[in-house]
Length: 436
DNA sequence: CCTGGAGTTGTCCTA
DNA sequence: TTAGGACAACTCCAG
Image 1 (cartoon, rainbow, N blue to C red):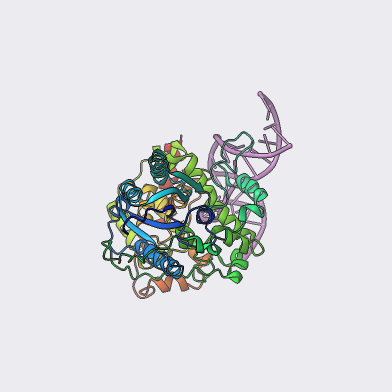
Image 2: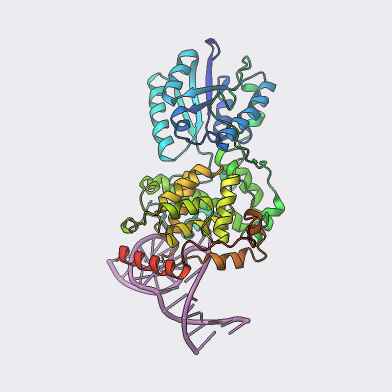
């Protein structure tokens, strides 16, 4: 860290908003009265929980920080990177700099909420002003709520309200990129390397943050076919904030209502987790925690490895294992298979996806897993059990996706690890018993 | 408070 | 081959 320049300054704290363009808190920081120093903290509590050392997400963050650093350097400024527990990092920062105010964007997940609360109290106790802003979603917290003020728990009425609120203001651009002259001038700091952080490259391709308008226009017709490039794959960029969700909505508004509604689903699940934080580890509908999930180590291992004998399930799991991505249609099929065919607790699947997905987001992952298990708000009815063979026939009719991920398909025959009809009946009767 | 309509993404069986 | 009802009732939400 640089030696103490005692001039008063503001700090902008990058978290999951790794961009200089259209960044709300950065915009407000740069319009403040002090020059702005940008920081990023590698949270050692989070890093130490990552068991896989070839983690593409750490790599993605580092790449994004390097892009930011290049731009900051053009303005004779530099990122300061810390690797510490956040509380300790802020202890160091406030000791080394004459910090007058701190700016960051909201993160409403349970852990960041607690963290930000503690850090804010610490900063305020030192007389430092804390300013935080909505940035990672269009509407958050209780902005979309029933007339009574209670949060919606059903998507359709939520979306109706969300859509009615969507105006110029809610998707305006905060042109932080035009204010970079207000950055603090500082000596260039060297960024850590991946190995400095204790990680190694994952060898996973990272999609560019490019918005393909034609793809969004055709989204409703193409999104369900995993062999087609029919989805934008922007999830990872929304996850880390390398694109602004407002800019995406601005572009998509003219193109596709279905795509817009998917952005609203993202807001919806974030809002649900904000109001019902227990739902990341417990069934949203408590009765579903009465299901006696099977402890089936072989079945779980087969599912993870993509060796269930159901081609679409296996193709999806192999795509996930090899690329850190799985097509959304296939996410539903694989999740349904684990919960319903194998009767394995949705939390185990959720944790596996959490380890593997480059675009992993707690609220969306938990929301969708609970949807698949039937335990979530507004979830699939329990008797709705995806038939993997039928799903393959409908959505991968020429087997292009299956053959892409299962090269031995057609040459070797793999017996299904569980019979569809038996599994279906077992599931319905077990759910029935639990929900009685 | 009451009431009626609706609820992301399915599947299976029967006629 | 295809269309329609059953699956299960319950809760949510708006008027």
